[in-house]
Image 1 (tube, one colour):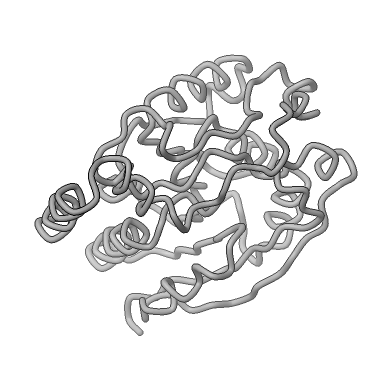
Image 2 (image 1 turned 60 degrees about the vertical axis):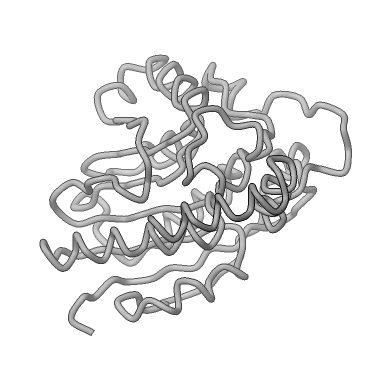
Length: 250
């Protein structure tokens, strides 16, 4: 934490606020080429939620030192995540689904279609967290199963029992490393069956490979449904997911 603060102070001194933000988000997802607003996602139209849109990491509210290394708010295509969760080689009813950087909550709502024991979202940006709370409240089933915490993913306390930790490329490498450090510490104190499902950017798998307690199981791309592809901000036709198992005894 001290080193991160020193880097921030040094960057502010050398590059100013705008230069620091530019450097922090240089490797984050860039804004879509088209400036035209996309229509609401069919998921939102079907469920009466607000999970659509794109927000640059530089514009997320509640930014702290960790927030400087956020990427951007953009939602997971439901069709791709549904396929990824359906392919998991575990008994889902034994697991808590934990979405780190959950944004407005769409991944939690997709996961709620599966028999997870519990669903937990963690979001640092206050505006996104408020949107997620409002979305959760639209359905009693969601409200009874989903908890969204306005907390830092680098310090969050994980619930007891088996975990499926999900990340949809929410952080740049400096924060991702701290997130994984926190996860490893807690698993060493309280070992339990744990999997990590990482979506969107296979480039960041090189960070995860530096943590020996994580073992890569698979990397699979799933096609987007025509409805998802039609409103995708980056005009993608498929989404990639890398699945890891956690073993602190390795």
